[in-house]
Length: 164
Image (cartoon, rainbow, N blue to C red; front, side):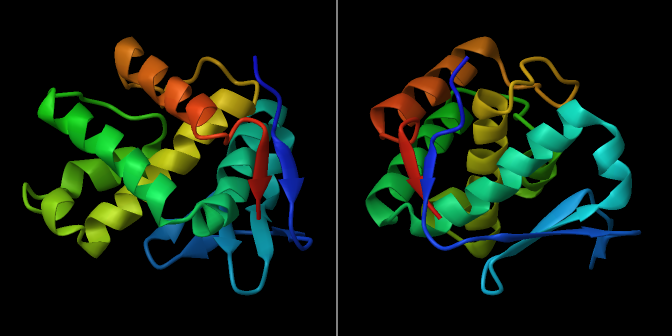
């Protein structure tokens, strides 16, 4: 299992909050990119594996921001190919519910809905690869698509170092 890549960049502050929520309701955590902080719901700390999975997901929001257009577009191409192949499922609920709301033209037009899905998919996939949690009920994407994403991370130098 790959270890979390070397992380470079300015520090990110971590906070624990009770009853953490966003505009849609209760959440486990949230990344605040401009403030360079990640907030976690206090109840999440009780489950080490779930905390690890969510922690990695949130850190990778900062990596996505600094990934650069070329690598972001390359990852989006993988997602488009999956959709054309009829891939169902995702590597976490945050990407799954967004994927379900996509319209056929979203990928082609790179709508906000598509870009948010791509970001969440990237972060959920990173959490699967780097958190140490290899099995989870939210991992519903087919094995061949998972393997392709793992190869993309390795080939895109995201397994060695990330800038946050």
